[in-house]
Image (cartoon, rainbow over all chains, first blue to last red; front, side):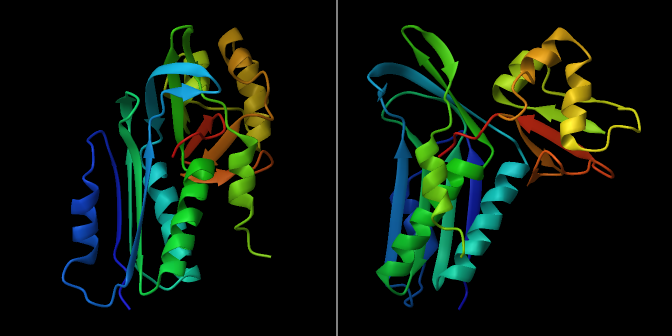
Length: 155
Length: 83
């Protein structure tokens, strides 16, 4: 079973429908595609966000995402994985990240997408800086994101 | 070896990357943090809470007690907030 992996880090927006079409192509063995998009929110803990700037560690970010994509493929019967993470400055409502997972059945696709997002938030080298009416500041890592990633640790 | 800094660590240090030559007695990531902290106020500020700082050697996450021997590139950054 072939499982193409596409990983891109880019300033440009992505087109979800187009990315799904690229992932599935003319294949007929895929029965489920799960799509997750992360979008810039306008508020964080009741504070209004004007914009968000995303910085990354070029080289390591791609490698870290690829490591987790490879792990997802080893854990679930996947037919394709796409991860696109944008970097730069974003306004509320704009896309930040896209994860697509394809499989024969939905369970593997759902679980793998959740696994990839939990790890992306926790161990992929990206950092968010918020701009609000009161100034700018780096977003602090959330304990809940660490807990979300920890539940995937093999026992 | 090359050292890179990201997010607020970069802002506090005041540069994104540099080449450093720590003394041979500096063997681990935490020893390198301690040595850098002694170089100037800026580094001391960046590394004032060493337990918060994450490190990577040659693009792989490492713990504070990891050895830096043979490292080509070491990066220091805060906990990640992508996604």
